[in-house]
Length: 465
Ligand code: 4AD
Image (cartoon, rainbow, N blue to C red; front, side, top):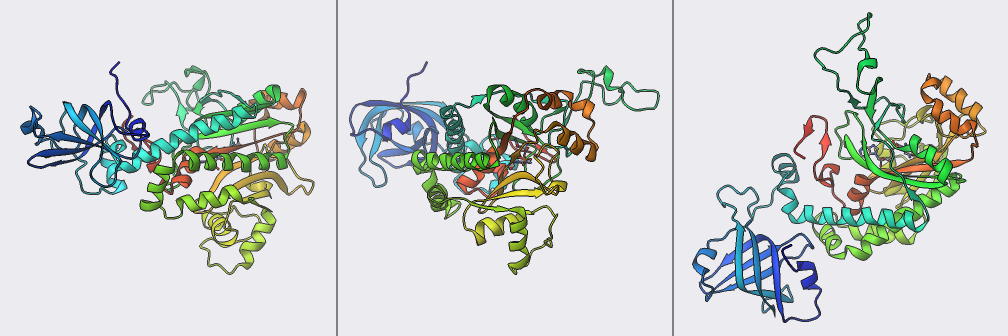
């Protein structure tokens, strides 16, 4: 393995001195008569390390033509930096250029590109920009913090299938998985495709949620969580929707809705606190260039309790607040993003958990309330974004669940395995799903969810990867 010192570790040193080896990419090159300054970044942190090439270097002439984007290695003494802005610089004794980047055609020149251009035209190069480096580092810290949180509480990380035959959310927005020839599929006498001849001998899809399988595991191991990719074939061209996104889904037996809300609140606070503690350099960057309130919003959230209201209370607030909403408000409607944002951002100025939704706008598995009209669902809304978590206490009573499925025209035969968990040793349990990209988006303040995942999948777009 090539031995190198990360720029992060170099900048964390208490003092200059000693030889270091840096490998990375030139972010900027300034060639003067007697010296060349190269700003090198290796992705380990936001900051660059300045590499100084003195005129005495045997390759000085050639190196002075070096340009932004080149991949290189520099070895030399770590010196206290004379210039402002940085404590150290590397005085190069040896400089190896692994690969040049022709300034005539390298797309990431000095000028600032729009996020749209970076995403649509050079998605494969955008990790080299400051913003995407910062996004990906924060994303990584959040992923680890998720595991730390649940592992610390004894939840077991369980791996639920990506290919499934059941539609968890019942919304029918699934991508089909098939090996049949789309041009000549085998057909039944009535002309319908004969999926008995398909790979799984029945229709199969990419999962929209690991929840139903997660429930079977929680009803044996008590507390589990999933963290993996999920897929939705909804034609939502918004700044908050992806066709492929990652979800974290804790599921816990012996949890009621209160426990579920407490877990969600503790969980989000843990994630935000971790980012504040461990990503201060990247977060300062987001606050300066992306979203002024990026840091202050998180600081505020970790120190104040979430607001908790019922759907019915939320509707009352929305009906009487005098805000000019695009979608009119009435009991029974789905709360829209504009309403979510009003509640969390303007009205409460902090995360809000809304509970007890009308049964008609929620999935079949949510526990029915005494009133017969509402279910024990919960959504967590955050300022700027709206919904970040959706979950519920689950219906554990077999007869109520069966009645609900019949009401919603869900074929019980397809859910025999799920109903078995209610037939045998059914216990109260609850869970929720946190959208991972929405979390990264909220934390960083990035305006578009497509800019917090390396290769976003959205309607009519699946670049690279
Ligand atoms: O509210 P949702 O649909 O809930 C479920 O799927 C439940 N089965 C979860 C559970 O109880 N275990 O989705 C959960 C979260 C949303 O709050 C949102 O943050 C995110 O997943 N999400 C999306 N993120 C990006 N793009 C999309 N198309 C998303 N759809 C949902």
